[in-house]
Figure 1: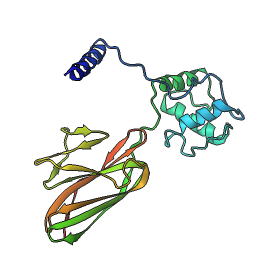
Figure 2 (figure 1 turned 90 degrees about the horizontal axis):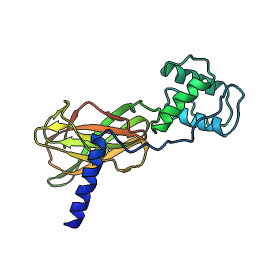
Figure 3 (figure 1 turned 180 degrees about the horizontal axis):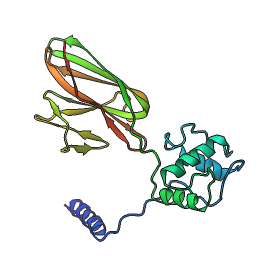
Figure 4 (figure 1 turned 135 degrees about the vertical axis):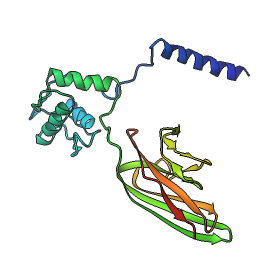
Length: 228
């Protein structure tokens, strides 16, 4: 009982902080950027800049962290400047440094691109009487954690979704279950989910979910399969 009261007190205090507009301060992912940088610059801060920019493959697809500010880094800086409305010169000056530090201070990585899902396939078979299985496999454009939402009734994609851990449960008329990929929390670009105990001859509804390391989530369009 004491433990429950203690937890409740923590929740109330945290809720009060949020109510008054006070939120825990996010810890910066990198040390502050201080030094102007351009073509030919070298050193630890250049490596830090490259690592930071590489969190968004759309800005820095090369993802090369060498400590040398070359043409690829300049191109990435130009893309960063275009993205944030800064004069795109490919040089990290005061305005660009300020923008980098603003994002960094909030621990907001640049990757806002959800992974692309492709090659979703399902195979099924029979282990024994009244005990069939199905395996769902798919690929993604980047390493992800994965799961499959499986339901015996049609899945309705609408705004009434709710989160469970990192993934979401779409609504279905009689519930459903989320099965984590066989690799668990490992970040890989190929995923596989196996589910046993299915009813032979039954049709099931499913979709796959893929979550990258920056918290961007993709889900596939609902599909069906019939257990053999």
